[in-house]
Image (tube, rainbow, N blue to C red; front, side, top):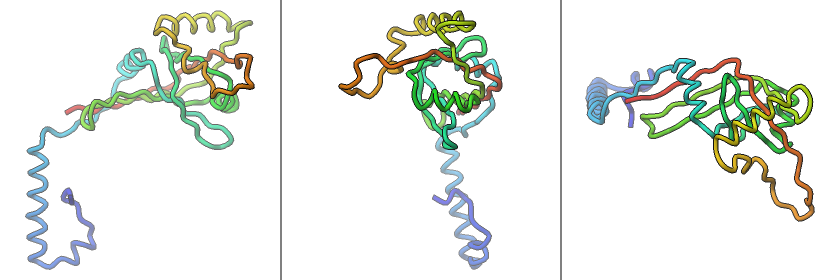
Length: 188
């Protein structure tokens, strides 16, 4: 379907009668699109709306960089007061965030191509250790995750099965301190 767009080169190649037929075709295509329903309106969300969607979501995508390559992975999380709290085994994403603590985080909901929202948060990774000055924040993260849903540690505590592994692998709690947030939504 042409959607009414043509290149200058194709316009120059057309003769007068071809131009008339092409123009008529474009008008027919445009009118059929109008009859299919209302146009989709994409708009920016306020920071408050973005935070509301983060607070209601439980799974998002974390984007980080390791060895100069982007790495995106879904994680379970809880949002509260400008922080995204989560839990992970130590592996690629943790090593990536330790090396480059500036990260990006995305959540979305797509009901249809004409009805969706998406929130992107930019922030800084921070480990919440079991002992020391961050122990209270770690305990707080545990409490938030525990309230959010049963078995919150799954699949974050799972690793590909190997019969050689008898001890449980090391894990940690972390948070992302949000520095900037933006979002968009599409409505009919």
